[in-house]
Length: 136
Image (cartoon, rainbow, N blue to C red; front, side, top):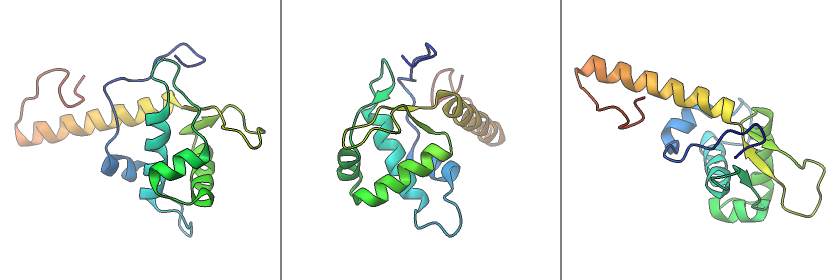
């Protein structure tokens, strides 16, 4: 559970391609969209499903993503600026930080994907049972 009492979604994990389209690294950045998606995904997966907190170090996240520590640090910083990840211990040095996924932003992403999925299904004339493929 997060500080405001909400739980992380247990069945939704953004796919790589979907997330890349949302993050969009700034032009001129040395970070790619896929790098940001990988780092966000690692934090999301390391986050405890109850509290939603990730205690993984930058080194652990970097190893999981196959990135350098410096690139991982840049990605975490940008994800923080985009308010996708909140660092609860920003001044901590030489220890793993407490990071949480910003559920309000994630809810906006999920809602947008659901609407997009519904529109595609309606266009194709498909019917998807409730609760399948993210349909509310």
